[in-house]
Image (cartoon, rainbow, N blue to C red):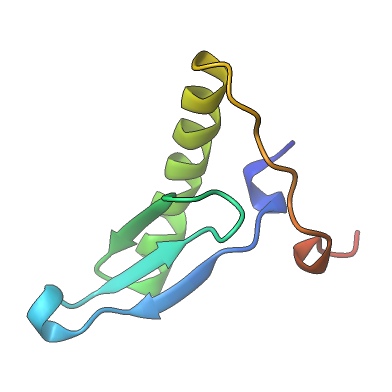
Length: 74
């Protein structure tokens, strides 16, 4: 399962929270990252997805499949 299979939501952060952008993965609770730009946030979330999956497996927890509504056409 590739990290790009998961939908990523990128939103701007308010200035009082440091500005930049935050990226979250709805299918992986708590999986988030940020960046100065939307592109950086996207690059950073790829690492976060891989780390989330690796840690879940190490703990013996299930890794959710990407939601059907988020799967991109090949």
